[in-house]
Image 1 (cartoon, helix red, strand yellow):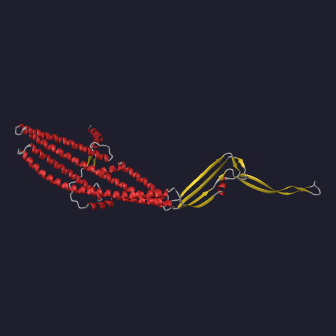
Image 2: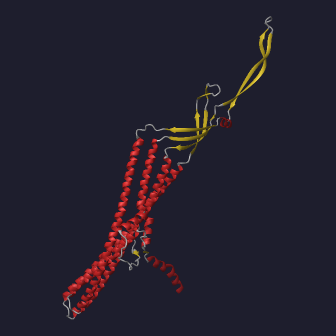
Image 3: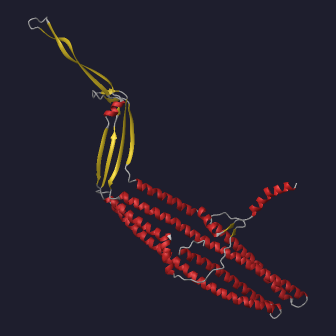
Length: 475
């Protein structure tokens, strides 16, 4: 019987217990999950694959083409006899197989520049994937750090509740023995109610922060969503680099400016492609062909001599004269398919030169548009550089400000801790009233919360600056 219950526990109960345990997400796991499920990122990956196919096609266009055609036609009614050139009433059919190939010898280097342009677009698109990943990782990191702060805020609210609960019990004993007036108990009970309401509000902030992170990860809302708490006790407020130094590193290692530069180069190459339309093009064509015609016949001529009357004697017209006469016999038979295929087989090699003279100014207008696109790409490249520089400057300034705020709030917390400890001693021996005590208590917990917020804000800003200098966001 015991064995039976053991088997039931292992088979049924244990899987349920393991299922009930929520998965704990670390920052790396959140980012990797978002990479797999973010719609915009996956669309960019597909776009890059399509651009890669265009790049391959541009290279394949350098090869000669090769095409095989076979045309079969049927004629019903009158047709021309190939032997007599007379119109006859006969149903006929024709077949025209051909094999041809064309290679471009010169077209103003259009195809070569198209290969170069598509390669530049392909390389830029691959860098855009990395840029999108970086932006997604930064957004997820910000949401992740916010959850860490909100969890700490809940703990602080709970600690304040526990502290005030102890004071309420102590105050109830004092009121019961008449040592303390009842209004002091009412004041501290009101503070406890305020503490509990503040905790509920903070817990709701945790839930909202969880939802924000889950939405960034493209994950449906999960009950009891939990994240790992990293060890961030060793943070240092020291900042050694300058904003300019951070930007120089970011411009060198991040894909943003590289992608923009490649896109500018692609538009410049596209300008060369459009200019090629003003130049002549030279093509070499080679072809093999033959034909078959069902009405075509093969005629055989056979010449023989036959004795026939060729005249009479002059002095005796009744006496006929005979002699050999040349007679040609004609016979016709269908011309076989194999013979026609062989006898009609032909080869051709041709050079064709096309010189553009006038095309309604289409080529020149396309060149003007291409020049405008180049200038716009250059402006966009400068805008990308400006954006990266501004982002770095903002992140660096925030880190500097965060460092100072963290130091200031830490010093404030030290002072408030001492003040609150001193106030607690006075309150416990009756040297101060409950109002002053609660004011100092609120100041203390505000200082704790301010220092905590400054800590996590500084952690995030430090990660952002480190990211710009080449450190992975998860480190």
